[in-house]
Amino acid sequence: MVQKRLLAQASAAVAIAVLMSACGGGGGTGGGGTNPLVSVAVQGALWVAYQDGANGSWTTLSPSGGFSGSVPSTAPDGRYSLAFVCGGTKPNVYVVHATRQELPSVNFTCGGATPATITVSGTVSGLNGGNALVSIGETSTTTAGTYSLQTPPGFYDVIAVRYAGGTTPNRVWLQRNRQFSNDTTYNIDFSQDDGTLVRVFDVSSGALTVSGLDPLANETATVRILLQSGDRASIVGIGSPLNELTPIAYPRFPSEVLSAAELFRVVVDTTEQRGVVQFAATLPSSLTITLPPPYTAPTLIVNSSGAIQFTAQDFSYGETAVVGYLLSASADSGARYEYFITAGWLGNANAYTTPVLETLAGWNSAWSLQRGESANVALRVYVSPNGATPQAVWNYLRGNPAPSGFILRYATRRQTLTP
Image 1: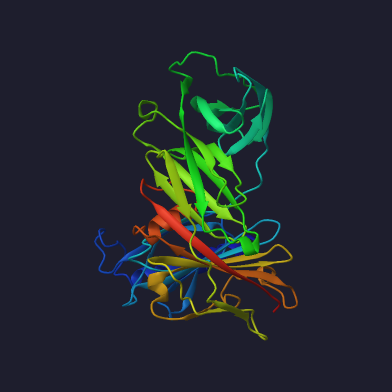
Image 2: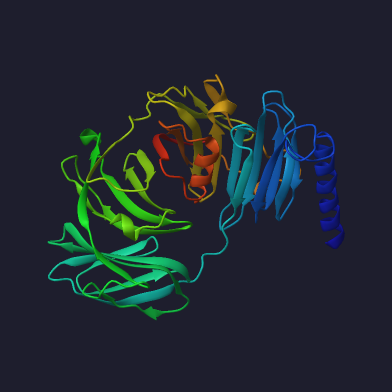
């Protein structure tokens, strides 16, 4: 077993050395090398492979344990592809198609075992006949007196928003960077004086309206508004409008309460898998989120023999500027494949077919999709009207905060296919 593992590691080292030699011995555009590099940091993966150029040969970078380092991008058009597998009950296979100009750095951490949770509970007083939205990070609940939340241990911003009559926010409780290590009793009192450790302050009310819902599809939208403090985020407003005439009320924080690094994140998702995400330093007195149009043009198909490949045809969409696409296939067994495709990599092509990974060194047949098993296939288009870069979009999709002014709009075409 040890001999096999050493042989696999040696093979990977040789492959990486060959790749690096094509790069003039290492170093990137700022590191002394003659050719540019792509920075790759994939942690916890079962397998990682790389392709230099849209039609280049694939090379297995790591047969196990992830990969961290630089790989050459020598193709004249700057295109490259990266594939990796994350473990779990069922495999999750990820493929990235990008140009080095658009996505010079790919960072990804495969999720581990589901962390154990703790319970944070307590009483909420000073409600004056109203109710409250209590949030510990992105876990929240509404209450008229007591609450209980389950969350993994960690550092969170605790935010409670008091509502008069159930709809109008008028006061906020805020404690930043509070650590919860085990089951904790945490009481909230809106009548408490404002302080330095816990801020308690009055707020005015803003109104958010969602425009563009499809009544014929019975489309509804879920709205979340979060305060983003670095890597921490906590919910300050949430709701599900049934139609365009149902506004969501949200609290408007006084400017002196916020730090320069804090932003508000507004997320609108619909049952038709359309949505909008935007980051802003402040929230206005009224905000209308207009949904992007449906994504109706693409056709999704699957081949009938050999390794399973999905094809998307006709990427045309009615909004600009398109940043990229996400093609996903979720099998009934639980296996999931995701293909992130930047607009620059796709270029003028109007069709895309997923690569065959099964023939590459180190591939495990248990990761492959099986014929006869239905898969929910979806193609999502990402649009940024204010020029968000593919790197910023990739970072956001991986759970990282985005800068102020970041706007991402998306719509999805879905089909069920049986290979």
